[in-house]
Amino acid sequence: MEAYIVSAARVAGGRKGGRASGWHPADLAGEVLNALVDRSGIDPGAIEDVIMGCVSQAGEQGNNIARGAVLASKLPESVPATSVDRQCGSSQQAIHFAAATVMSGQMDIVVAAGVESMSRVPMGSSVMLHHKAGLGHPMSPRQQARYPGIQFSQFMGAEMIAKKNGFTREQLDQFGYESHQKAIAATRSGAFDAEIVPIEITLADGSKDIHKVDEGIRFDVTREGMANVKLLQEDGVITAATSSQICDGSAGVLIVNERGLKTLGVEPMARIHHMTVTGGDPVIMLEEPLFGTDKALKRSGMKIDDIDLFEVNEAFAPVPLAWLKHLGADPSRLNVNGGAIALGHPLGGSGAKLMTTLVYALKNQNKRYGLQTMCEGGGLTNVTIIERL
Image 1 (tube, rainbow, N blue to C red):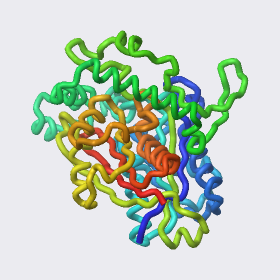
Image 2: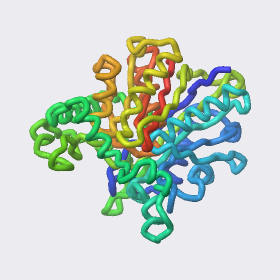
Image 3: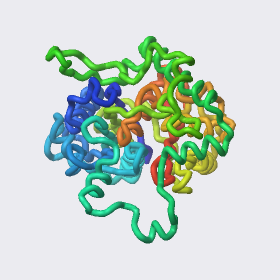
Image 4: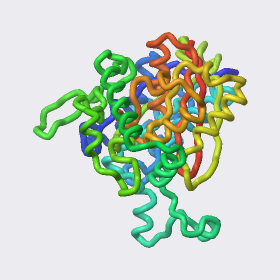
């Protein structure tokens, strides 16, 4: 059987402490679930499972946030749910799990989604809260023996990638500047309108407003301004302006097989063409999308030039730049509506967020194939190839 995407939606990203921070993450994800139902016009009770990515599964995102989102939505209590953590690729992995489930025929109608409220549940909460309480740390004695004196750090991994490829501060700044420019153009042209779920928010003065524009975009960005941002380390090349933004957000896609299409009476937006997940060096950590994409292309019998659009998560600017260099890919096809440097990176929500944007970008540009990949903590990556229908 095949796996089809029949509905996709995301909330506009919110800055740390910004416009979306008043929403409990379960309610925020519940809004996305509601949107998937409303946009497809299906009976919410027809959904057989909800698989939801989330990285910091503590506090308001603990206790199986996926089930909390179902209970905060219009879906009936009969819809089960489970939460997934593959670090930044959590909701891309949720898509893989949902697709594999419907392709096997176990289920016909599954939601893959993700959520992260980085304002309300700070990054690393699931680790640091326990560590500070004296309850241990994920780095075990055997891991320490295997990697003596090494502290795993995504930031240091990004600096290592930049050094390995000879990327300069100016190259990274230019990439970051272009991310904002593409996001500005997409916003002003209405390219994001169909994919974004507007949410009501309460402002500081108590008045109500609708949040529907990604808050991280700097509409007044300049190259001069980016050049003045302080380096994150003195001998490095990365700044906050060339790193992904802390973000509150949620996204989801509705995935079905042929029986699901007939049962729901819906038309597919895209077909899941290929899925790959790989693991590599956990120290440089963020380089695995390069090699995961190699494997995905080989297994799918495709060449990089067969792919019309790429979504490579902008965790740090050196990652997509190294990916372009390694694959020899056309930079004009990469993150055509901007990336996480401008739009934000809501960790566990980003996989479904990028997929939603990719599906709509293929539709808007009348393109056929799209590829999505993200670097993930621990030296992991997911690669997904879709075909627009």
